Length: 331
Image 1 (tube, rainbow, N blue to C red):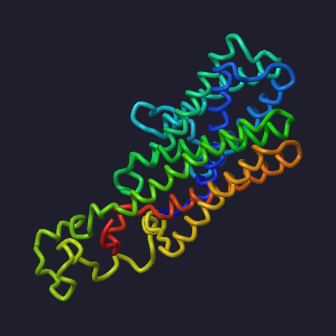
Image 2 (image 1 turned 90 degrees about the vertical axis):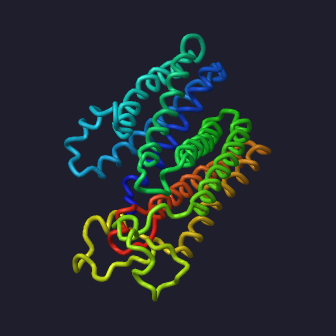
Image 3 (image 1 turned 45 degrees about the vertical axis):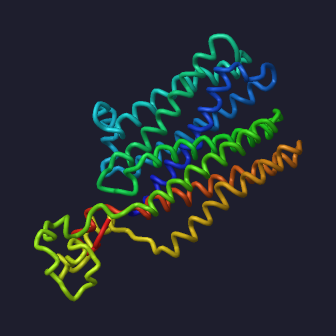
């Protein structure tokens, strides 16, 4: 699939924002938000989360063919995951604004915990709906797996935790415990992403050009000059392209990334999104002051850059079954 930069930025920025909201909502629900001077600090973190989410949502509008019709995305929530995502994203603003106002006024306890539960649930549900937009596409086998929503949720939680630890240290709050939480979530996210890559690496092709065209029914005698070990469907091949230049389907659905390039980008993702931030967060656990803030700031920047690379690769490695009609032998 062609990696659209607006969607890459949207999923990465909103994922970090919703991860922040989820953790802040859980903290409010558990009455773990310190009172006094730290209340406004958590309110500032919530504002940063809202900025990340809003910037991501605005970026996603650039991917629409008719942005002026964006409001129609809210009407099909019964059948469309994209519509559910839009509805949940809008609804999550309500507890976020209410909770932020309460923290700013220095009232983190009492009835505010219920807003925290609503915020955490809304943030998790929105990220899940975003992931299900891709999980539900059976025509893209590498997305049609339960590892996709798991990876989206894990990466959102990990990036949100790193940003929360950095903002807490920057605003003078105690961040060592939050840095430890970030390390745990980074390990979890790395394990889930590694599981996704192993799963798509072991997956056998479900469709071939022969099964897509129905020509595999003619048997293995179609092209005896090819490798006899191939199944009949793989022996079918295109003699002439249907046109002289790539069409929209080929440009959008037929994007291909070389295996060597993909391996390098996976290594970059491991380093930027998981390993380096984990090491920096561990270093911040044993320090305080400017040193901890600097380490956590680098960790937040590294995680965000790594998620952007991971998300580009997520789209670039995906293969749509429509490419079988344009020369791709198996998907």
